[in-house]
Length: 139
Length: 495
Image (cartoon, rainbow over all chains, first blue to last red; front, side, top):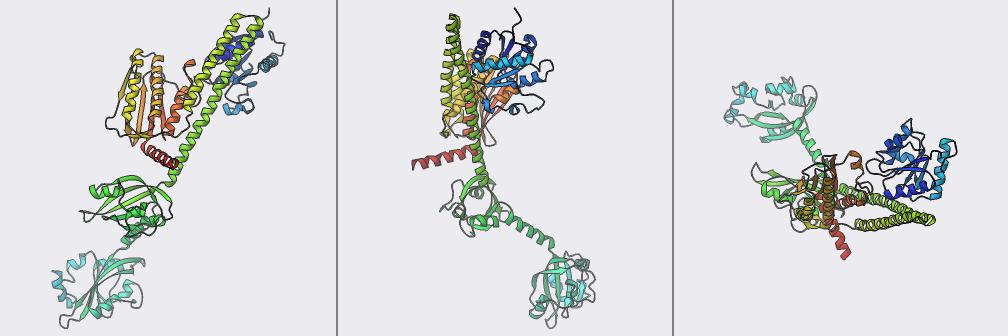
């Protein structure tokens, strides 16, 4: 059996992370949950995810703060990120409102809570495919 | 002594004329004969006007070649009466100057006719300039200035005052400022008449067009010869526009608080919806896979999120009481004591000392006691949590009440966990909580809203691992304004 595709879920609401974990693991992805943005980079280092699902509004440090660190890191910048948040409606999401720094690219996807499961899984699959350029294992 | 010697001056070279006194007197002194010739002058005169010997007075005083119209000396030669006049003269450099000239006749001892006139001039150019400046300042300074006598009649008013209140000299100040028929209660001028000190107060009056005028008046005594207070000067700053701005700011703060609240609420509800969706999904998946454990976990998730909805709605309802605070004169110490009594046991059970620091002489203030009770409850409860989260020993929470620069202050300090900059930034911006499932993130937001409704603000100071300070500041002027407004609105509603 080959190595499963790994997804890191950064989310402070335990029920939301459990939900995402259940959806993704049912589809055969390997997941890990990190409940603070502060620990995000360390968990990326340890877990080496192929994709990150990221919440924005979290205590101590926002998801966007983690996102900027990730995208500015040469080592991890290519990891695709799906931001899942209830803070802004999907049609109104404007990355520059959160990160005015133009050197930081916008996230690969933004989804509004509560998510559409099918659309979420399709997006995950598509981003992983684009990132690796190969057929994704476990999807 | 001088009066006795003057008649002996008929011979111009008399001792007196040439005496040291004649030279040193702080006036410009000249003696003029009937033909306008200056026959003698002192050094001050020569310093100011230049060469005078063998010259006519008009040539020296005015640098002109014929006698002045309405020449006062001419009149004195005629009627023998001394005169004092203001005169515009020209100095030796050709510059115009203002002098006050005292002219006195010198009589011939034999026939008593006026033989000479002695003219004593003093320069008042600088005095005139200052007078002019004071006059412009008095009229054009952007304040209302009135001088009132002990009967409270306006004896002087500046132009700015007349523009807003009309020409009101001789009228009673209370009639003019407020259209009242008797003296105002707490009149600052009355206090100044009584104690001779400066007083200040905020007032509202009615202008000549019926417009409402808010002003801060400051009163100062004008003493008669350093003794009795004959008059009081009232200087008022018009703060009507500031009052409008202040109201706008309070309204804008209220609106901003509502906007942030709605955004935060939407975020919380979306997370709950996501949890409900999650529960539903897990139950569905459990049924599909015949996995009892998954069904149970899904069911628990549904329960948790239904419960979250209940507590969110309950907290939100208490938060969203969209109303003006119901202000009543309240003893701030009493409020703080109630909170201490409420939390003393709870704090004690966790080994936290709950202390109060009251100000026994503090004045009552118009407060919504329930609202401030809620704020202090939130702050003390947070402080106790912070002490429990902190690793320090001997933790304490102090609730203090005091007045500072006419601002009523409630302060809750703790030496618990404290907050770093990132957390401090967020505590009022969203439904933010560091208490996990325990908090809805509404406590501080609610407190801020309630404080803002009182025209106040919350100041937060905190240092990680050292503790936090939450200060509720209520400027008493703003409290009084909102109190008056709420009473006015109440009257309108009752009508």
